[in-house]
Image 1 (cartoon, rainbow, N blue to C red):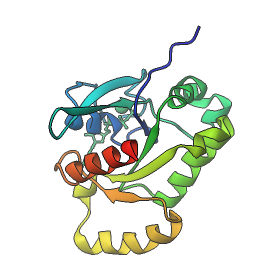
Image 2 (cartoon, helix red, strand yellow):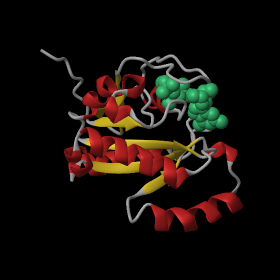
Image 3 (cartoon, rainbow, N blue to C red):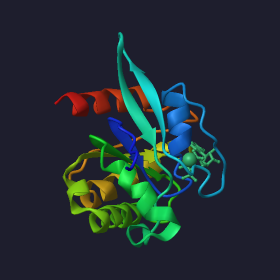
Image 4 (cartoon, rainbow, N blue to C red):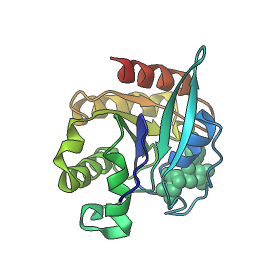
Length: 177
Ligand SMILES: Nc1nc2c(ncn2[C@@H]2O[C@H](COP(=O)(O)OP(=O)(O)OP(=O)(O)O)[C@@H](O)[C@H]2O)c(=O)[nH]1
Ligand SMILES: [Mg+2]
C-alpha cells in the first residue's frame, strides 16, 4: 500500500523555487523554509481559505530536479504524489538562469515519469517577483508568451504578497471549471 496525498493543487518546481514559502502565506501550514535545496523532504498539505467559506487543498511537494524521473534526488518518491493532484501549479523563480528551460525540464521529468501527468491542468507562477522591476517584467512577458506556448502564467511574490489573491482566484476557477 502506498499513501498518496490527495490535494486539489500540487506545487511543482525545482528546489528553492519558493514552494514552501507560498504554502506558508496561502495556508495556515508552517513548513520549514530555507535557502538551501531539499529543505522539504515530505509532501505537506495545507488548506487555502477562499473568499466566503470555501477552501481547497494545496500540497507542497519536495523539489524536482533534472533526472528525477530516473529516481535522482528521490524523484520517484516525490513525483508519485503529483499523480493525485487535480491541478499542477508550477513555480519558477524570477531569478532562474533560464525560466523557459526550467519549465521544459520540469515538464520533461513529469512526462518521463508518467505522460498522463501532462494531461492535468497546469498554471505557471513566476515566484519571487519582488526581485523584478516593471521594465524587466515587461521584457520577460514578451519571451514567456512565446515560450510557454499559451499555458497561463502569472507573476507572484509570497514575500511581498504580490499576485496572491489573483493566484487564488485563478486556481479556484481552474478547479471549478
Ligand atoms: N525574494 C523572495 N525570496 C523568496 C520568496 N519566496 C521564497 N523565497 C526564498 O527562497 C528560498 C527558498 O524558499 P523555500 O520556500 O524553502 O523553497 P522550496 O521551493 O520550498 O525549496 P525546497 O523545499 O528545497 O524544494 C528561501 O530563502 C526563501 O526565503 C519570495 O517571494 N521573494
Ligand atoms: Mg520546501
